[in-house]
Amino acid sequence: DIQMTQSPSSLSASVGDRVTITCRASQNIGTYLNWYLQKRGKAPKLLIYAASSLQSGAPSRFSGSGSGTDFTLTISSLQPEDIAIYYCQQSYSNLDTFGQGTKLEIK
Amino acid sequence: QVQLEESGGGVVQAGRSVRLSCAASGFSLSRYTMHWVRQAPGKGLEWVAFISYDGRDKYYADSVKGRFTISRDNSKNTMYLEMNSLRPEDTAVYYCARKDQQLKMNVYYYYMDVWGRGTTVTVSS
Image 1 (cartoon, rainbow over the protein chains, first blue to last red):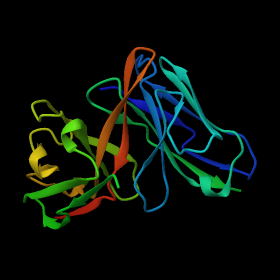
Image 2 (cartoon, rainbow over the protein chains, first blue to last red; image 1 turned 90 degrees about the vertical axis):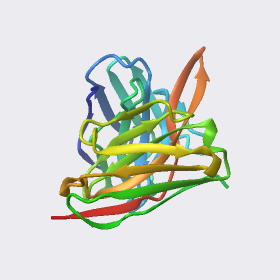
Image 3 (cartoon, rainbow over the protein chains, first blue to last red; image 1 turned 120 degrees about the vertical axis):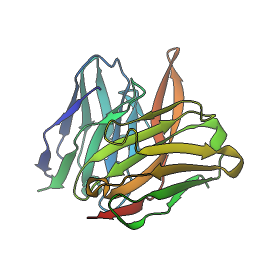
Image 4 (cartoon, rainbow over the protein chains, first blue to last red; image 1 turned 120 degrees about the horizontal axis):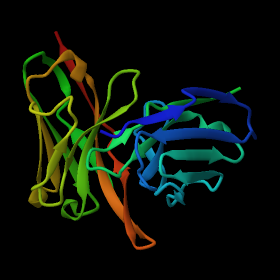
């Protein structure tokens, strides 16, 4: 199975900060990488697919990059409503796997 | 309105069985592959199972293989997860999710774009 490792596990930043979360795959997955956010008590929500494509309706301050094994989710200017847990997910294999999550908090 | 709604969760004793349902509305289930994803209390997301458009292909996480069975009835616009030999570690919120695809530079990419609210399964020992 493909393992996905995110870093950091938790992150505290101020409103307006640029925030970066990384995700590493245990093998080459091309750009078959998606990002989701999950707010407290809610279902996950798709943010980015194919490593860098912004899902319809997602704010433009979110962007994704990377290919192969290393990927990045960036929030250009952190907003209070971005408090959530962020997950990467690979869709390269038929057995999807998620990263362990990055908890984002506001300072 | 495109949505998924899970049902069937509850408290069940270890070793027993439960069947979850995922009802789709606002779209035709037959046009999408579908997944179950679970989240144990205070933990991250764990992919559980996949089913192809027509139900012929199914894949499972190692943690549930041989105990869980995913199925679908496209005529009812509903997907199911039959969970047998339940263990306390199966305690989780179970989400169903639709997997859509997008053609980008001549390659199809896949992502879970619609999720249900989840149904909670608690396995007591």
